[in-house]
Image (cartoon, rainbow, N blue to C red; front, side, top):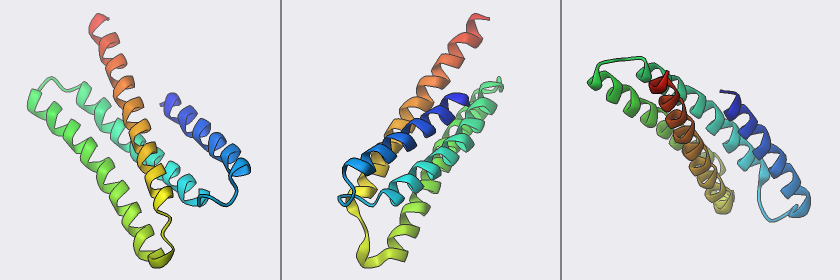
Length: 124
């Protein structure tokens, strides 16, 4: 859990530094909001992963894993649609693509951490 908070802070600081370098090219508020939404969604889905890990039933494990992925995807789609529908003509497509890149970073970190925890639990 601490890893995700550190990742969130590192991305926020990197975005703040990029904002000073490229002040007018991207809407950094959108990317910062995307970072926050992804952090919250990742924390929620990681809760499902941890819950699934403790279950011995294979069907329950898979159900929890898919629920976690679905939860994060729905949260991100809802956030993107909310932004698109509220901004209409002023949508920053590059900021949305940057948020997609953040989605990939958080997904990679989440899977990596889950596999690391799984290995430690099996060896214990």
